[in-house]
Structure formats: C-alpha cells, structure tokens
Length: 167
Ligand code: NI
Image 1: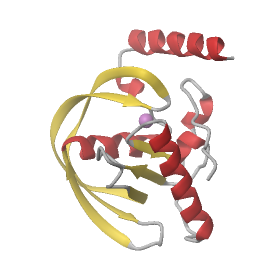
Image 2 (image 1 turned 180 degrees about the horizontal axis):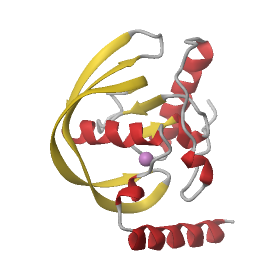
Image 3 (image 1 turned 30 degrees about the vertical axis):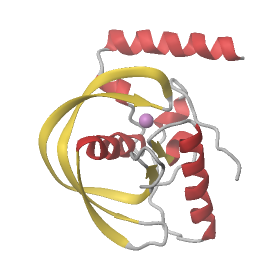
C-alpha cells in the first residue's frame, strides 16, 4: 500500500479543519490501512487524517511496542475528562521536537470505527494524551500552539531550515 505524505509544520494545510465521516466504505478502510502503515513507517504512535491532507475526522493510534494495538477513531467526541497532566509530546508533523504540554489526565470519548460502529473508550496515561493530541489535529491545532510564541517561532525556524536542507 502506498505511504502517505505527512505534512510538516508550518505547512498551512495543517490548519485545516476535518469534516465528519459520513460514508463508511472500502475506501475508508483503505485510508485507515494506509494511515496505519504510514504511521508505523514514520515511526510514530498517532496520525490524524488532516496530517496527510485528508479532511476527515479520523485518526489512528497504536501506543504498543509491537504494533499490536491499532485503534481507529472516527468522529470522536470528548464525553468526560478528569485531572491534568504535563508530558513531553512530539508530532510526526514537527519531527524531532519534544516539548511539555498540559492535557487532561483521563478522558472518555465516544467515536465510530471504520465500519461505522459506535464505541466508547476510557483512556489514561499515554493513550489519553495521544488521543487528545490527535483530536487537536482535526481542528487544525498543533501541540506547538501550547508553547510560548518565542518557542514556537524557534521551532518554526528549525523546521524551515530542515526543509531547505532536504530539498
Ligand atoms: Ni501530531
């Protein structure tokens, strides 16, 4: 399956908002599989469709070490949250940068899988943080937005330099 191109910060397309998924067909399953493969290859633990320039409310996550816990989350909705926790986050769209971000410690979401089946998921720890990070992508939000203006600008310069070097 073809790997998808992951947009890099500060690409303005990362600021696009996702629309709800309404059609659950084979194409969607193929997209899920391509997103997973792209995420594993990167390698990363989460990828939102907006990051590959597909404006659908869809994300894939696998926080396991052996690629055994793939989760596909479509049209997620935050139902409950509890506590706050600060952890270092990274992002496939902002490679090699890790900065602390404050998130809810525990969350409960309602979402659909790639077949359209609804499910609820309670998460804490890394999974909770990862889901919140990926859900932000669906609204055009990046983890660097939580940092100071100065830090974000420094990261942007670094990314632009990296881009020039690889072109
Ligand atoms: Ni990300």
